[in-house]
Image (tube, rainbow, N blue to C red):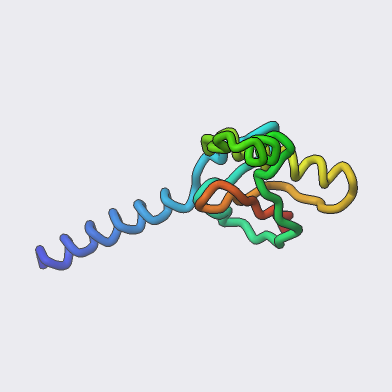
Length: 111
């Protein structure tokens, strides 16, 4: 009987740990929810892709300068590029999922 009670306690603890893992506070960059190295748990559809390439990085690359960016800087450029495309009517999105390398983002619209 002691073994059964111990199993129930372990299962209850495991279930509470799983429930906590499904939620998080999402970072916002320029007011846009950004999922870095994670995905939302709500259903969504992909509406487009953007990268962290901008005029500054192209000029630096052509000039032989270092084009290294922190993940925060890359996220800011990705959001800027996505918002620019949204203003032009090319994509519509609610949030962006940033790739593991930090150089591309997938724009998503929640269903």
